[in-house]
Image (tube, rainbow, N blue to C red; front, side, top):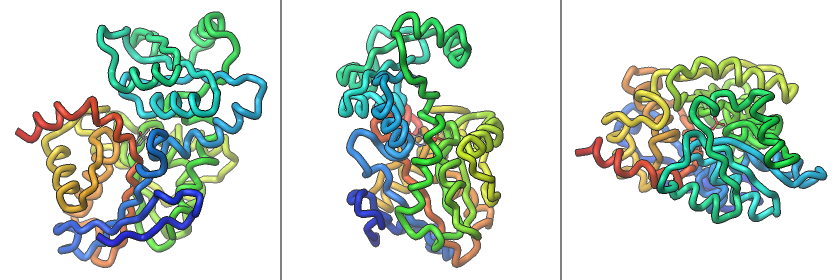
Amino acid sequence: MKIHPAALPQYPNVSVTTVDLPDFNKAGVQLDLLRLDLVHPLISGNKWFKLKYAVEAVLASGCHRVLSFGGAWSNHIHALAFAGYEQGIETIGVIRGERPAQLSQTLIDAAGWGMKLEFVSRAEYRNKNDQQFVARMHDKYGDFHYLPEGGSGEWVVAGCREILSLFNAADYHLICCACGTGGTLAGLIADKPKGVELLGVSALKGGAFLYEDIRGLLAQACVSDPGGWSLALDCHEGGYARVSVELALAMKYFAECSGVRLEPVYSGKAFLALQRKLMRGELLPGTRVMLIHTGGMQGLRGMEGLLNKKLL
Ligand SMILES: *Cc1c(COP(=O)(O)O)cnc(C)c1O
């Protein structure tokens, strides 16, 4: 495994490694891995870049309180809670589903960093962007900055476009990352060198909404869509946080050959999409591919049991 340091000195831990996978080698396809998972021990992976300018904007404003959203194992909630703790920002996490008897480890961490947890029913969570819901939260918590789910608000493109300056993006034919809200991919699209293709792999079933949401985020950032990007909508393996046997096997194979673990909610599905492309003969000999490890390994704590069951 070759390791190249990342280009930007302010991210000394991020590196690029060339992954030695027999099926990719045999097809003459180079697969590199961008280790965004190493950018910060607790504000992991893409969430560091998603939060960077949002946190700056909050600190520059008169109101040091943020309300945002996520599930019980949300990487965003985890990262936001720590960023808030570190920066002296009050955080409120609106969590999907009723309060369970036993909090997830993610939420135990978040509460430990001072995040206030507001549990809402799944039905209410679906209406979280409604005026009424937001007004109710203001009644309860006072003034706050509203950060959309996953941290994909007005600052996401500015932060995530910096990911492409961590390595020589123009050296690759294809750059691939997983999508939840599409905010990270929108940032990559904004700074994509000409001739490079981007592939976003939806972690959710019914990911077609991503086209519109990504275009919306680009428009909000005043970036005109350069094209050259596409979405894989068929590697969700049953839906968000669902795992197929094929996904569990692909992740195991990747970890055994590279020494690097992926997680099944996002980066595992991104790798699976690349493997399927390879099997369909869509990656020609000589193709150089970059897979972005978007981090979020803390969420794996909630998935180990399911993963092991799939491998039985
Ligand atoms: C949040 C997350 C994503 C999805 O990012 P979006 O910007 O919402 O598309 C991908 N990978 C990991 C590990 C994440 O935690």
